[in-house]
Image (cartoon, rainbow, N blue to C red; front, side, top):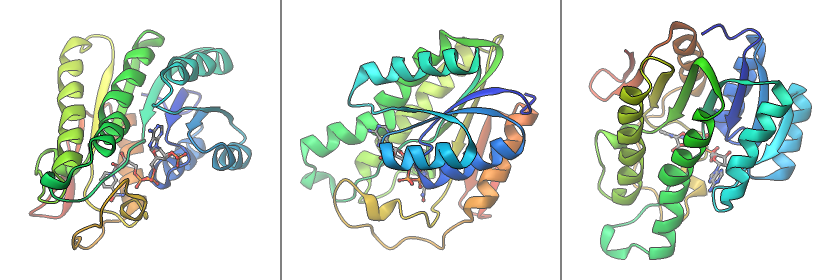
Length: 231
Ligand SMILES: NC(=O)c1ccc[n+]([C@@H]2O[C@H](COP(=O)([O-])OP(=O)(O)OC[C@H]3O[C@@H](n4cnc5c(N)ncnc54)[C@H](OP(=O)(O)O)[C@@H]3O)[C@@H](O)[C@H]2O)c1
């Protein structure tokens, strides 16, 4: 896709990866509509990037359709939706709190699916859907069973969606390894296990933007080579 002049709804703009993606897309000339949950952080990034904003919280389903409608109205159409939202929880499966499980699945699976579904109704032909899963979707990890399952769920949704819309839209799944964004410290529950050496967030962001330009389908962290592989 041509990034310059494109109209993009970016969900999770208040997060670390989402914020850096917003900056990179803005530098490449995109017209952004930024969605986030924390109103203060959202106002701050909106001001910095001179972009309109909308509060999006998956626990309030009307805010999901509302974010898409606000973006379409504000930008005059929609060429891409980028989903950089998510949450993690740690701990063994036997200790799983049902309320934490519900919030985790909402943040990583049902919420993003709902947002993508609403966006599909308004995306221009040739548009792009970009969503961040995680390496644990492919390599489920002990102490992160529910997080792994929530990300695998979104990955399966994206694969099926790609088949459904292959003649109309590009679907890009971004499946990174561990990065030092403070994400683990914001866990809904539990303490993180020992993590591998963190990967570079700016590298990931650069690869995502280039993959959007090139119309790629997958960015995957390869655990053996410790590199991002793009398909
Ligand atoms: N960091 C890593 O090591 C890593 C590795 C692999 C994959 N990922 C994935 O990358 C994505 C971004 O991670 P990050 O490191 O940038 O984390 P982050 O800084 O904590 O950002 C998470 C974003 O998701 C939003 N969010 C969380 N729960 C939400 C909900 N229920 N409804 C709406 N928005 C919600 C947050 O909004 P507010 O801040 O406004 O509340 C924030 O914008 C996540 O999907 C994560 O699973 C991260």
